[in-house]
Image (tube, helix red, strand yellow):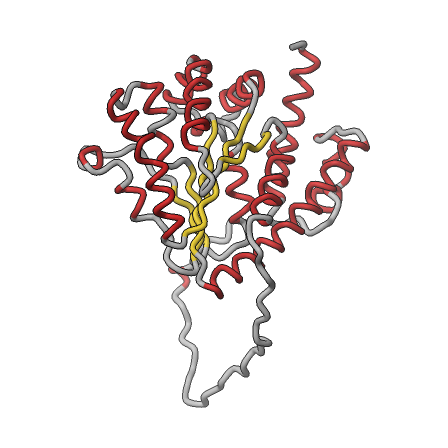
Length: 307
């Protein structure tokens, strides 16, 4: 890749970083209105086609997030139980997609489960046991940022499980997932797919961005070296755990923005949800009592107003 292409990629990553910060505040307004035209022109050089692409992205993202709110209300109202698995290589964009899905939803209804490596006690349990405690009750959605498929991926490649444990996983996981579905859980499995070159570029971006270096662990770096081993493990996983009750869905994730939109659009299509009509909300009148006087707060208790 030439220096010019690398500079272009760095510029696009910078724009993505700005977008991530603006998404919570952005309401169908052009970027120039958010940060000022001079700043946008000086720091975010883009063609008109690129600007239109970003405008379309934000427009579709907010529309789809509005539908996610309707889905959330329907899940809570009808007592649905939903589990969504997000799998993929390191830096494939799983976390970014999860963030956009949950961004405007109620954390009491929709929550994320991102489990750390198992501790000594958990390693002696039935393999699926620590995941079961995170499954939803009625009216809840749980998004797993990596899941029990760690055994088919990182544990297999890094040697954290033996051959017997690996084969037992594939003997058990179809029955385990069928059991979840029979119990009334809607189980959806996504694999985020990126190219060798794209992962390399994303890792380089994290290495050179102090705000993103925390995302890189020694395990991530080792996974880069073992690209082909992870590819083989992924192929086996998709082949041996793609069942009618819980099929795998592959998200093309080289373009992060398109991946997010496509994933959310597909997710919404997995449900025949309807909009729940809520009662009209009326703000009650504030009560006043003559015998109440507000007490002053001591000045030394206030946070200094530096800004």
